[in-house]
Length: 324
Image 1 (tube, rainbow, N blue to C red):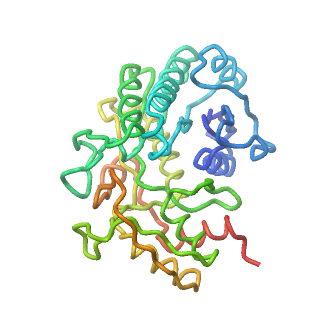
Image 2: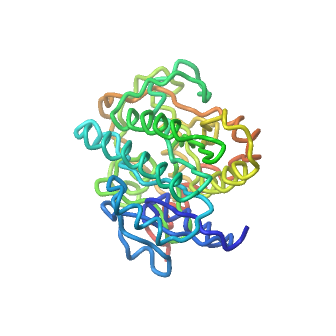
């Protein structure tokens, strides 16, 4: 299997660049396709890549052809900020759904038989049952979540014995792989915000303290980015085995819920720092609890997450604030 080319869309972004690193370690040849709208080509030093906007079919076709014969595509490229999607819904729907269709079309044209799609737990919205199983009803509470529902539907129209597709629904990836991690300005995700506040001596903003949870704060499921990428490789092996095309989606999380206050306490211990907490009103669209049922991932892929919340925090802190 070593030496096979894997096209990684969005490979200069957080998850994509981490995937590139793991693929290279495993002896694959990652080929990145990215438009660099939210990433930097400098991160791809020594990595083969082509620049293209996946909503442009002709330019994307040219980029995919530069990769040569590809064994699979891992499709990360998407706009992925929930709050931004509320302000720019049409942009999110056009970009994320259009990119999914382009990738599926090009897989068909170029004879690439395996497609792994970066989907999201945002498709579930406010699920009625926790932990969430893959068969839960779609009820996205944001345009971002709706864009992932539609992207999955588009990919479903292209699924066949010749093109095997799996949608991996993420629950809050966190952490870093060496010098590759997540950084936004402004930062919107919980654990990066907590770490930045602790290291900067600033209050940690907590949105809502009256949820129906043990301590009144939201409960979420976090998964280390390294475990997440390992799941992609396991999914690719599963697709290679020529299994049934009936299964279209798999949840990826830890299967463990952590409240916002629990995360803050864990970060305090991991970084030996004390947090000041600023409680703010609830944000619209935040469910009280969101956790994954990960049994299907174990059954199909033989995958279970190995790295805990303390490791996620330490790895992200090491990436964003290198220890001296």
